[in-house]
Length: 392
Image (cartoon, rainbow, N blue to C red; front, top):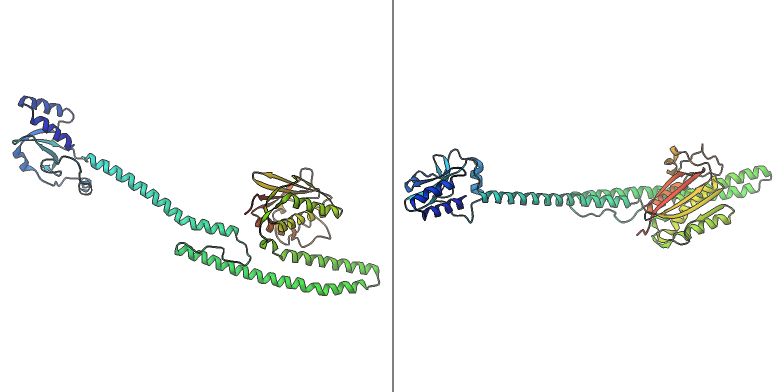
């Protein structure tokens, strides 16, 4: 605006008296706010006005004008409470432009828009940084918690970051140690009890074999054998070898074929269908134990067992299918819990404590996989193991 007034004043300075009227009329076609005043008019100039809006005062003080012709009398010039811009035409004349009440300088508007964009950008960047700084440690703790187990070992939660995050990680590490110590103590006690029972059980077996009555001897030996089998199952469940074993590259197909061949050698109808070779990363001993448990359950309740291996969506799927009575859908989540048995669905005097599937679940979870129990199309049960390939 100041540049326009200065430019018009320059034109008027070189114009004749007749031309000045034409130039002024042309300049006033927009709003008619330009007028020629005598130089003495500047005596009425003031630098403030009681009616000036606060926003205008703030803009003038915070954003001083730059790179513009300074008006005659300065930027803050008022006449009778109204803001004006003035430019000197000659020694006797001033060109005065009355400004609207809502006037804001163009440079202030441009600067304000840039300032607003810069402020919004900084706020967005700061918000992203703050959210990332707050959530990154929490995501790290959540990831460590998902991979954690109850075995004694080094601290699983990294104690770094803000004071609050370090305090949280330290508290979780302390809780993990207390839980591990408690579980280890109880496990050690149960192992001792199970192991100590083997000695009197062996003496009972020797004494039962000396009983003369055949029916009584067979009944006693059968009960002793059952107790011995339950003790072995309990000790097998209390072993945590699958947690300590390291993953390695091995042939998954070969493990399944070997397990099926072992059951076939014992007279069971167990077949393997799938690729002849599939090399991936897993815990061979632990996974062999899991497949063995599933096959033992399958041959216990069915006559024909089929083990299939395939790859789907970057995951290895192992299906152990039997033709037994299956498991009712309402019990399929509970049978994965330790010591739960569906007696109404599967009557068998040789059943154990119901720990086989619990062991399988622990092993598969250690591989970041899952166990799913499904209905077989023509009757029976499908125990499906889903394992991510190339575990590290």
